[in-house]
Length: 228
Image (cartoon, rainbow, N blue to C red; front, side, top):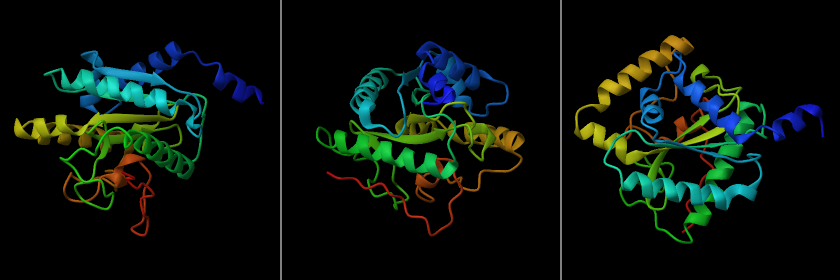
C-alpha cells in the first residue's frame, strides 16, 4: 500500500464531514438548496470506505432509510443525504461514472427485496420521468469528485448526494422552484464558465444524464436496471 493510500484510509469521519460542510458553505458553491439544508441541519452525512467496494452497501441503505423516515416526518424543505468515500481518492471521470452506477445498482437491488419503486416516477432510466428510488422515495442524484469537469462538483472526496425528488415538486407547487433553479444555474455559469451541457428540466429528458456530471454523447446508455 502506498503512503498516499495509507493517508486516504486514515481520514477521520469528522474531518470528512467538516471538509464537506466547508465545501457547501463556500461562497463559490452554487447550490442554494444544499446551503439551506446545511444551515437548517437537514444535511445528513455517511462516511463510507472505497467506492468500488460493496462492504458498506447495507449500512448505506440503512442510513438512507433513516433519512427517508426523518424527511417524511418533517414539514420543511431542503433535505439531503450525502455518502462520502474518502478512501477512493482521485479518479478519472469515466471511472467515477462507472462506480456511481455500480453503487446505485447495488443499493437498488438490495432495496427491491423490501420495497417497491416510488410510483410517482418511472424506473426505466430512458424515461423522461425517471428518478432513482429507495424505500419508495424518489431521489435526484448528484455526484461530486475531485476530477469532475464541472468546478461546482469538485469536492476532494468522491460523494453521492441523494436529494428527495418530492421536495422539488413541492417547490414547483409553491411557485418557488424556477427562481431557485435560475439562481443556481447563474452561479454555476459564473463558477464553471458555461452552462452544464447535460442540464435538463424534469420531464424534458431523463435525469440520468445529470447524475455523475460527466458529459455524455447521445450513444451512451445508462447501465442501471431496476430488478424487482
